[in-house]
Image (cartoon, rainbow, N blue to C red; front, side, top):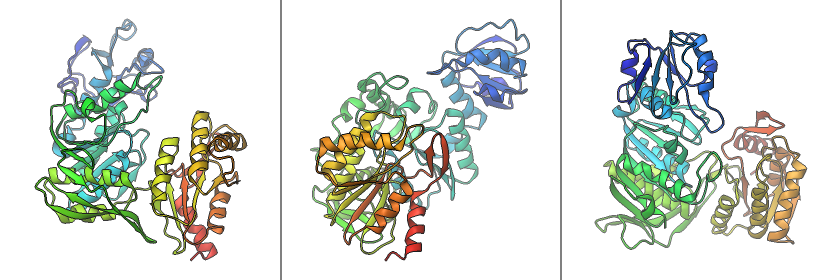
Length: 496
């Protein structure tokens, strides 16, 4: 593709060379430099890759995209284009390179602090029940047409994102569904993408600090940018931040909630709990815009699942789906590592969840408490080389709210598990000095202990790792998928 075609829609200045230069691919990692490629120089939070421009030129790249002036005297044979924002330019050039695939699919973006992953999985389940062919991108990876790939970021870099959209389209997908992070919006990873539907779940302080957002207000503002690039926004009217987040929105709004005085899709304040070997869920009464009511079952527990289901229903209705696939999809929706039941016993319930901070742990335990278990047992640790505040907080919450805790490792990285557990115990002493717990440093041993000592009616929550398929010790990652390990041990020991 000629550079001129690649730059369609991008404001630029030609610093040297020719727009007729042929480009075979785009890179932003200087280690991949080779003839025929275009290297995009990005100003990052840690490093400015303009430093590597000369090296890339020496390796034969055909063109450079720069954001600020550099010395071009040592690279006379390379075409150089200057832009205001290299990240923005890369997003639009990547879309052009792959044939602008997002324009040929129904685009759905989900943003918010909590619930993005679960909501996208619910929407995918509903859409597939309606016969749609869906590609999905988010925290748990990339899914399309029975395939799964890992991704480094909730919202991948623009080049990888556009390449993935191309894969979706070539595989026959008619819909692309994705989590849209505040970082993805701020760093122009989704620049140039217009969404049919944008979804807002909720907002809490998060991702505030060096290299992220300078304040909660900035964080909220970037989340709100999604609703300036979609046709319809499906938003949580109960969240106190919704009005401020939607400031400047350009889309039509569809609202959902439980308590707000006026919403399009409302769930009843009273809901019913569903529990059996295969499911821990809820049932609620939905009131639609015309006043029609119907009962909805969700195969996931808790009030937060009701909110995620309402968002999903709103998306389904915007896209014109019938009631049957919406209800079927909500019943069947499953998110790996998010309140995921591992059905090994009729006597007790065991589940795995990604909760790995104080707020998520508290929300999960309070939700599980509603099911009135004989005992609520929590198996958890905390990550190494991370803030000790998380350890104190999780320890305090589990001491207050759980009946029994099994303290173990998470991803220790380069810390000793004993030191991490000591910090957790500090938090537990604050929460409840009389809390019952046991220390089992090896996480596999801890899982076995939880199963061996389970009592009838217990609800056991194994938290912190969720969908992760590895264990990190001293920087070495080894396979460790908890769902499979629990199933294998149950089969070996004959758990009933």
